[in-house]
Amino acid sequence: MAEVGNGYNSTGTGLEYDRDKEVKAFDETKRGVKGLADAGVTKIPRFFVEPPEVIAGGWSSRDDEAGARLDIPIIDLGGAGKGGNRREEVARRIGWACETWGFFQVVNHGIEQRVLDGMIEGGRRFHELTDEEKMRFYSRDSKAKVRFNSNFDLYKVQTANWRDTLFLDMAPEPLDPHVMPLACREEAIEYWKNVSALGNTLLELFSEALGLQSTYLQNMGCGEGQALLPHYYPACPEPDLTLGASKHSDPDFFTILLQDHIGGLQVLHQGQWVNVTPVNGALVVNIGDLLQLVSNGRFKSVEHRVTASAVGPRISIACFFISNRSPFRVYGPIKELLSEDNPPIYKDVRLHEFLSHYNAKGLDGRLALDKFKLWY
Ligand SMILES: O=C(O)CCC(=O)C(=O)O
Ligand SMILES: [Fe+2]
Image 1 (cartoon, helix red, strand yellow):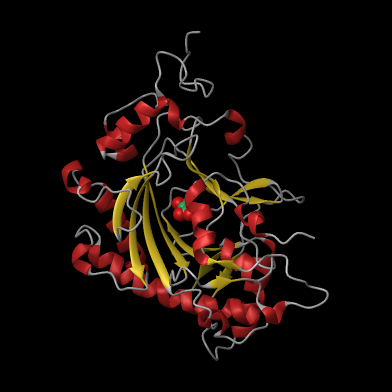
Image 2 (image 1 turned 45 degrees about the vertical axis):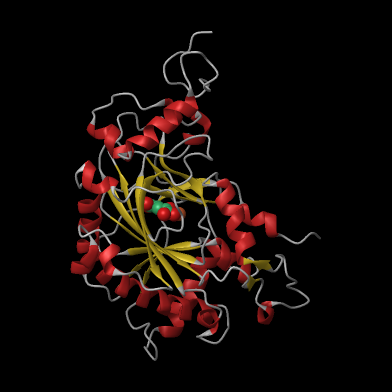
């Protein structure tokens, strides 16, 4: 049967379309999605086309019952430093946000606007390098501490995302600045110093919100590893057919995200997609699967996605807070949080077991943590 258009049902079994070959050819250009956008494609390749039901239902902000626009909580961190007059109140509010939304934005976080703007511009500069300069960093080797690619899970997933990413593994081993692209080196180092300090403050606040000693989560190594990911979402010629990032939850303890003014990030809240409206100067914080696991399900790792847009490029910088990657380190529900009324719902799991599960599946939107649930 002849294949029509670029519909999802064109699965690559037809004579005219060899999906694997097309995916490989795309990868081998080492130009990423930006290469397609720059070439002026008016139709996106079929392996980017999502089934319509995957895209449906989420283009606008959800309204609450009173008709007001619903958005994730915004938390003012002013006065929330150690000994600050708002510390307790802020810890409580963060605890509430982590239990109900798994996502919130922070303002008055102490990182200068200049540093935020510099990081966005650095990310832009990297992705807008000439193909030749950028290609030198193209790699799918997850051991490479600096790597650029499009769709880290390109060969594992059904449908690719309209996005390119630079990965910078900043910690626990310090990253040699000389291996970082000059286009964003200074900006990334400065932003990372600031964002890792904010990460430490958040870990203290998360600990306090859980009723634990301030240093509890830090002592568990929750923020020892940090990866900085400048993402680039080019303008898309057919934004209704694909996504910038598929529905997923983050396989880390938590993430701090800096986004530009374009928007497109959506959070799944009570079964509906809620837009995360860009707020100038704010940072988005979300709980990852490992914090859901160690908090025994109290903090929620919530699924999110990024829509594609005809307007772009959109730039965002994710900072993943992971552990020190010692493969045999075991994470499980924190004993102090457990009781007869709150028995463990997750198993203790070795980090390598946890991560290999994620590496095998890519961003596929399934609730990965369920695999580590205890059977009752
Ligand atoms: O770009 C965004 O807004 C979200 C990125 C994201 O979800 C991720 O890096 O895990
Ligand atoms: Fe994410």
